[in-house]
Image (cartoon, rainbow, N blue to C red; front, side, top):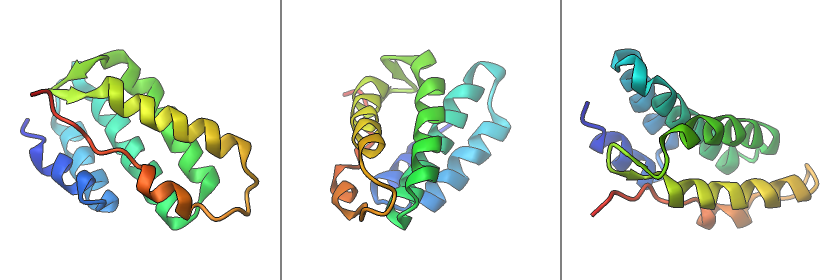
Length: 118
């Protein structure tokens, strides 16, 4: 499965489309990669919730996605999951500490890019 389009969409902050792309991959992938693609779907959805101001939805999806992606550390399909999860986990920690009504815009520039092993 070529996942470069999903990575491009994610890195361009088109989280809704990257979610759709990774969901299609999940439907077509081998059993061994199912949690990987489910995790990418959930991280994409979490980012979408973050930019939409939905703290609860963001945290829920980020937490579920990181649990799944940890099964594939440090790299899978050339994605640097170690760095991606480190950045997502820092956002989770900070989101857990703020009140529900705080503006989440300060996190937008902290959303990590998906980096490929070079």
